[in-house]
Length: 406
Ligand SMILES: *[C@@H]1O[C@H](CO)[C@@H](O)[C@H](O)[C@H]1NC(C)=O
Ligand SMILES: *[C@@H]1O[C@H](CO)[C@@H](O)[C@H](O)[C@H]1NC(C)=O
Ligand SMILES: *[C@@H]1O[C@H](CO)[C@@H](O)[C@H](O)[C@H]1NC(C)=O
Ligand SMILES: *[C@@H]1O[C@H](CO)[C@@H](O)[C@H](O)[C@H]1NC(C)=O
Image (cartoon, rainbow, N blue to C red; front, side, top):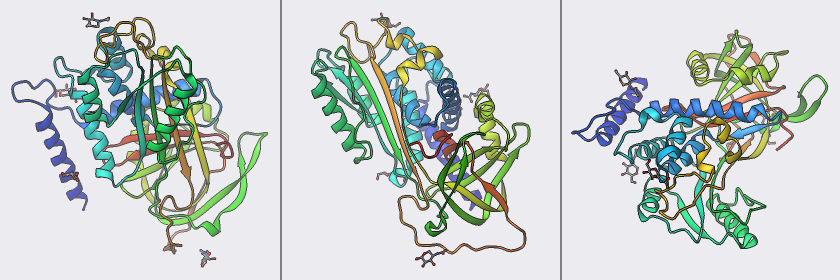
């Protein structure tokens, strides 16, 4: 089983390579989608720290989805603007002169691999809204469709009301009503708006039983306690690990379709903001690697979250500034002068409950009595990562400080 899986991954990588590198030119004979995943995780952790640096609230976003939308902007840009995007996204090593389609194609392969041709359903949408005065290059429109299944819509931003309802209606349809209101205000001088939204509700491999869910305290800090619906299950085959240096324990909860949630729970008395500073791609991958099977009792809060970020106000500090300034070089998108990106909005929604999307029948849980279960109780602020196992792609990451805040 395992061997077969590895073989398939290997074949897939080989196929990608043949597809990616023309025989006469082999600049990166060893680029794989795993390299891309790793680079995306690094970017995700940097972005996470940027967000966490100015917020003590819940955090939730989709790194893969954000990286993918900037890969789309990469096709629009040139000169310094392009260099900055490559640098901040960690993609410099993958950029090759005269092969503008290489990075978009890698992202496309990664997305396809994660989606397993549609069996994992992520209600995801990326769209560019551009002021009607700009003429969009045909080649850009074609590539957006081909690699990113993304639309470009022309809007008259001077009509703010009309634009807002047009944009909201578009996103609502694309996310099957999961995100009914993406934006509520809009600047009438907007030229270009990139909106990326994603909804996730996975089905657990082993669902929690709804009648075991009970209200229980969640300790936000020493002074604030909230009551939350706490789900419960006992399972003989759960994977955990302890990061002693960091002072935290990790637990893997598998969803169906090759995706898992990794929960990182700081030990009692360890301040989560200390862990904020320590999170990195390397650490994340080492937690996954060190997981071992155990018999566990899990107590975990049910929660819903909906978070939106204005990336145009976070990314300049990370080194991506020209895109949002008058020196933006977006000649790949439009030859018209003076075009800049006004806003990049990202919204991610998650629903964590007993079952997930498929209402699972009350599963009887095979309890193996040879060892007393250890207990993993998520009753204080924690981190979570939802990742695709075969590629280690980080689909989502978040921090829950207060599960009662959506
Ligand atoms: C490709 O291989 C070379 C030499 O083996 C190595 O130095 C380089 O880091 C590799 N590149 C990637 C992207 O893995
Ligand atoms: C964009 O960048 C390219 C490559 O550096 C350069 O040739 C072109 O003049 C730039 N265009 C604008 C509008 O800055
Ligand atoms: C995905 O679907 C397409 C068309 O339905 C098919 O040609 C392709 O082989 C499928 N790929 C995988 C990995 O299943
Ligand atoms: C949960 O409730 C259902 C219906 O009330 C019942 O049939 C089932 O046995 C219960 N399961 C557990 C684990 O208590």
